Image (cartoon, rainbow, N blue to C red; front, side, top):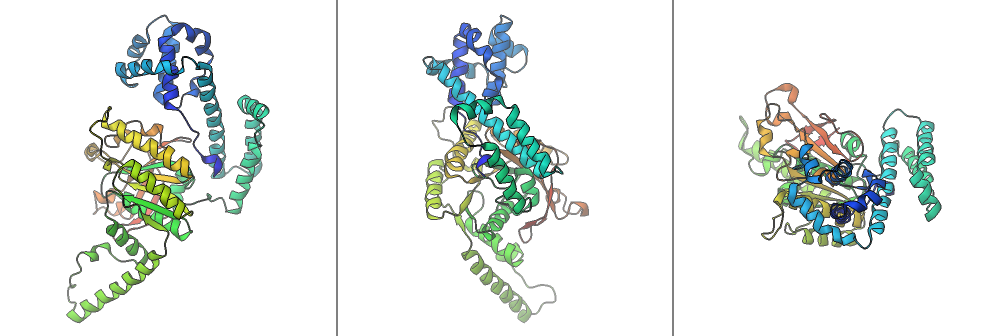
Length: 447
């Protein structure tokens, strides 16, 4: 959906503006106070801007203010402030243009928030009239929108939102492109173009199984998925797909011994029956629009392959990258490797999701420290291994919780997995989330 795109942002421009004001305190008095903190996309930049504002108001240094308020380390410390100061000269000659650009992005974000709120209301008990009134009130009270409409003569965005909503009514309240899992759609509002979702868990919890099922559900609706699998071999994913379709226990691919009291003839007959199912399943998946990327874990190679696949298969709507931490950190990378994975996610969002108009889902491993938590439940995106700042680029981060993996003998843990919204760009994150039914023996996940 067009309105579900995450607005573009410019990290370097944000850094340049902050650096300019750090280098030129007097100019902050002239123009900085008039700015709103909402023009900054990155949370750390908002904190720095507020610190500059308060520090100059109280006639103290920015470093002192950050230190006294216990946020100095959170924003990157002296090294990051030095980096900002070095960036400041980039907008010295065009400060007004830089501010106008970030202000425009902030205005667009307010519209994104409005449209996301509309979708939330679609999933609630609000009536059509109540939702239409919300849209009208927003547009009537939004000074930034009124200004943009008058100066740029843009189309009536309110009418576009209304049209999209009526289209959703025709789909029975379902998203334009569904994952096939109501629990997943409830968190993400479906698979929306230009979005980046991150799914995270410890190994063997269900990331690959979820990927397999969403790709299969999408394929049944005629939409394509490209899978870049760096944690699970292609043949194993294919086995999982066949098992999902034909209800075959995944263990038989490597070991299918004779059962107790089973004769040799019965054993061979049972294996031949399984073989017939595998052959039928293969015929089914041969027709599915599911493609393996089959390139090394290098972002430029992944990006180019996505472009090639999209050109060859216009129905491609989902890019699934199975293994964020599988990308190798270059030896000459200037920052901590946790920022490298942030860069990978950010480029996947901008260079793949936004440029191609597709959804990107990235699987990421959680740190081993989660194993030390008594209930093993994910509670924060900070538990993702070797990664910082992913919440600033991802539209949604979902943690998977399947206690059956840890306690298989406890009946109440059997057969379900919880999808926990650890981070959401719009809407509330939560410690708990919707559950889906899981049968890992045949790689099946359903509502």
